[in-house]
Length: 486
Ligand code: NAI
Ligand code: MG
Image (cartoon, rainbow, N blue to C red; front, side, top):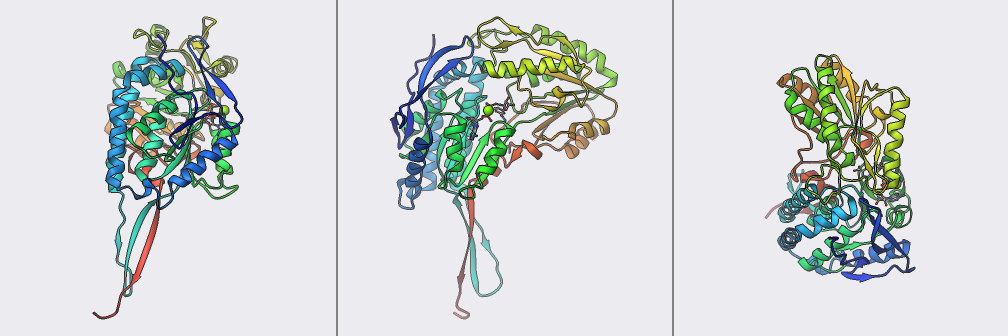
């Protein structure tokens, strides 16, 4: 049974309101394309109202700014408890609105609660230094929240993205306006209600559902916003960096996806490497920024590896994401499904060998069979562009040196992995590959404590860990003149 939709309006000042212009939009279940809710469609005026609310909540005399840092941590821990309490509901909502299989949703919501607790623990550990300056002075630094933040979310992992960005900004003491992706507005609204229930004061977190070109762009151009944190496409990331320098000078934290290489050496444990490589690109229908979408396999094991990879892809179970038997659900929407199918056609026409899958399944919902391409060359489109679908592209290589250079021959640099039994190969790879996240004999292993983000066009800044909270802080140096003699 579909989960009850409790919230479908704009959330400003801890109140639910309609859009100023009265507009709404529909949101769908990607399993069958059925409408599951009609949601208020925020635009420029709603964004402005939300930013003004966040600005009031950031005033030096506001409840939020006067609150002890340890109390901010307590509120965040309360929020984590509420997320745990509502884990079943939030997971089901995510599955219905996003198509992620329910078992994975449950794991992600659990990880999100863990992420909140990590950030809660940081709230009262944000501290400056005393600085031994020359002369008769006493100098110290203060770390202070940067101000009103604009957080623009993608549709692929909505709960985790909301929680990662919002709770990092809250730990730092910022206030904010969140713009969830138009495909998946529901979980952000449900989480906003839990923040209010936890006791977060009005105006600290506002949520405005709406579209990118309208609500999103208004947020990135707003002169009272100090920072934009965005996860999504490279194309929009570049627009956001430009917008950030238009009406004021905003900081930007950008996570813009990747074309992540996974390298399998001849000496790898194939029983482990083959299933990991499949998970690394098929899981969540390939709609993962860190998907291993370039799979480099060393010549000595290439044929054997490809044969096993095809067997795994053929056995992959597609189905309604609410069922425990389903390994994959549908792509998020028709546009994205067609985009992925277009890449598969391009792969075939450019001469890659499609060994299995790659077709749409059924006519309702947006299902695609996991596809395996062999004999992929570096200059083919499927080896260069982010597909965001269940498409494994296998490339052959001879030496580790060659694999490293080819892994680096991309404008992206988010994640990279290697399977090998040689510690030397693992260390060389980890040192020389230009990526923000490296995995050795594993993949997709993440933690709230670890920085997450990319080199090159994969983005700017990091989420997760201490690096993330520092993005939301200004450093102030204070110098006090001291009398020469006591
Ligand atoms: P997108 O980048 O257009 O959308 C992401 C978010 O940005 C949404 O909230 C959207 O409303 C907002 N947005 C769009 N245009 C905007 C603008 N001009 N100003 C401010 N905000 C704006 O991504 P889309 O179209 O959903 O997906 C396209 C491709 O992006 C995917 O095929 C995939 O390759 C990549 N992508 C990467 C993600 C990642 O995790 N890095 C997540 C989602 C998509
Ligand atoms: Mg877009």
